[in-house]
Structures are given as C-alpha cells and as structure tokens.
Length: 98
Image (cartoon, rainbow, N blue to C red; front, side):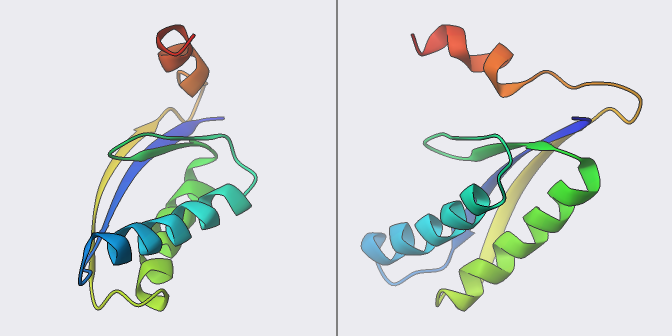
C-alpha cells in the first residue's frame, strides 16, 4: 500500500436528508471497492495503490451526480510514498477508539 486518501464529498442538496442520502451512496461505493477505509464525521479515509485511489476519488464525484446532486465539491488529502508504505489507518486511529 503506497498511498492513502481522505475524501470529503460535499454534494449540493435540497436538505440535510438528501445530503446524507447522496453521501451514503458515495460511501457505499467506497465500501464496494474492497479497500480498507474508515468513515469519519467529516471525511472517509481509504488505503491502497495510488492510481486506484485516484480513480476512486474521480468516481466518487460521478456517484454523487448520478445520485441526484446538481453539483459536488470535494476536499481531498493524499499521502503517497511510491517506494514504500504509508502509515495505516489502524496505526493512526485505533488507539483512540478502544
């Protein structure tokens, strides 16, 4: 695993319920990738290969639009180490959630 990303998807929505529904569809897509992920209150972290993660980030925008958002913004954080391993989600947060 040479990369991790955190994505905060911010679809335009008519109300909070619609916003949550659209974001849930994006999260369902992330779950379907089979990669290790962690859903937080503001963003979802995903671990994997850099190129695969960039494709997932791109598809998250398409998912939100197909789910009914007229537009979507996203904040993306990327850690990439082409010649090694990045810190895992487990190493970063597990000690705080026991």
